[in-house]
Length: 415
Image (tube, rainbow, N blue to C red; front, side, top):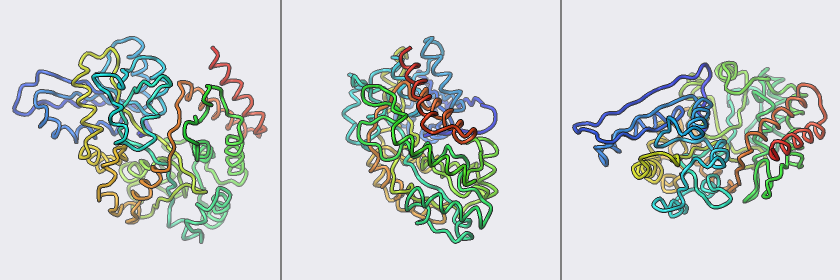
């Protein structure tokens, strides 16, 4: 799950003391918002099971958290007992060798694989079979849209979702009728398209042999769509997660946003709570399915309280009640299959106009393939984003820009 907030990063320390008992063990858990709230909510149930184990939670903004964990793993200092890892970082952390292999005894995490949505374990499994994290939540890709803006423009949900071309065509109608942009950034359509409809075992940026594949037709099409969106004036040229980005949703100057299902919780809780009832959720255009975000719980190799850390991770991930409580509290879509069968999924979502959006997301999650992660994914992502900027901002040729990105990635990989 990607939990990001604008403004300067802040550290939050939550220390929960034992109730009616003297604690003789304290687990240090490092997270990013809103996972701190998830743990706070789960602690009463945890304390009933382990009254002598306290949990101290350190929370930093997502980028700062992963930078801090990178330093901690590299220096073996200030290591937590348990750490949250967003899926975009899991490959890099796994390659560094600083995370415990949970496939081995006494963890034997593989025994739980069948209890989770298909693609999650693959994301945290290295090429040699090491499992470096237990799945906590997932981010089925979805299309959020402002129904009031669509209604004013005479545009339907089907117009948005029929195909990628119809999505852009709908944006032209929306812009002409209302002045609202279709998307915040042309990067939105590129980021989703390159992740859509991958096959089992594929990587986003690399093939199975570890070679970069960013000149493939998938990337060419993604860049062409982003370029067309810019040429048609459909993107607001806003940086995701900026203050301006949040304001665009509050003011209704952007009509749609493609991202993980968890964005619904952000919209309702802090980005644009006053727009309750105006938003809806739908599948991605062209019946595409993609994973966008997700969280794993890991144990550093040099942590000192591994048995109890593993108990805490199992408590967070393999208990239906804990997963559902997290979903209700912070919209962390559960990766545990038993949690996905709860009647809560069929309840209407007030913020989304009483739409039964969770059923849409559950169905989408069942179609997402298990893809491979590389320690160089972030390197590749940065190169691709830089190439896209050259195309949409400077008019660079799509094929030339992608070839330059591919060469840059290959150079970094070989170093």
